[in-house]
Length: 521
Image (cartoon, rainbow, N blue to C red; front, side, top):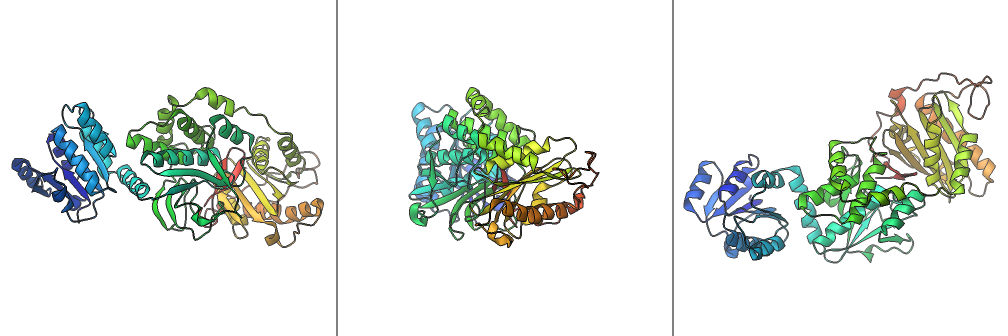
């Protein structure tokens, strides 16, 4: 079964195909020079003497052709082969070498016909070989084939209340879709409430569409893509059975997703990093707005490049640095903070309950769920504290934000504590949960705030401490400290922190926004 077709095979082409030791049984070379055909066969490479520019000959090859490489030496022949390849295999990934000394007309036509154009004088063999045989090459082909097959408008959906990584990834995917002629809209449910996230959207003037779940209809779009999360219906208010065409996400998952194209790389620190790769593989430049958005997305999801930063993230940052508006980034990072956020942080400090290095705090009713994350961050700066959880309620839902440093995997802790009664999970050092108030049994939306807070503390704080196997410190001070102000040394058992729990998709994972913990699935 042929999946990779080579049209023409000059000296550069021979270097490329000889460097493809894997899946040679799925490779076929069409070459008009009998001596080159014989050379290829001696190297156990399937080759036929045929005209590589003839559409009928190209169409006669049996197999689901995924990739076509145009590797002849003559520029005019490569031009004809590239045009024929695109006409015969419109969904295939076409990678074309210009040949030696192409004139402007040849180069222009080849560029329009191919997904990737490689000029003479570059590291041709290495570059083409990487595109064909490596994981990046297969991803590039898969995404382009899926996008090209879309007839109509693509809805690119972030998770609810999107963070900069989700928004940047969505805007980048929209840009890449447009590059292959597909109309795309970036959509989200919920709100963008955190001040830095609002500054991010407003200063970059991002074109986003906020949707109302009650007014939404599945036929509003002809195709769907999910970025920075996995499953429809999990923190995006889409129907759970909605067919999805594209998923690009850096969170791990437990259950497979029925999707036409999926790129999931939990080893990288941000989904934005993954989108940068597609620009690099395609050899096209993101504009300044997209580059700035992607750089900020990586910065936020790696907590200023200090958390889960990989070599891929570093390379993406280096690529974006000279293409982004760094002055605008500085403006985004210094927005004003609302009085409501300060009030929430103050209540978190006042209501804290301490168990050695662990703090939990119920702040009651909130107007901005993003303030919970900022409060959890603030509590983590207290001396002797390594794990924090802050929670409050709004519109019938309890929102939880947690932070940790050291040996505790806070995402696993929240999944163990709350995964059975809501959506919970996240990263090792940053996580969150969303819990319907009614499912907690003792809560009633009509209850006064004081009784709701009391019931929440009895349920959530106790469960959180139980999973961590810590006991509230003696005394009844606001932080559970002893009367002398010295907290007891309550150890946190790392093995009890949930490392035996199912991975992120068992109870949908939680991404880390600036000031928010977006449940991701």
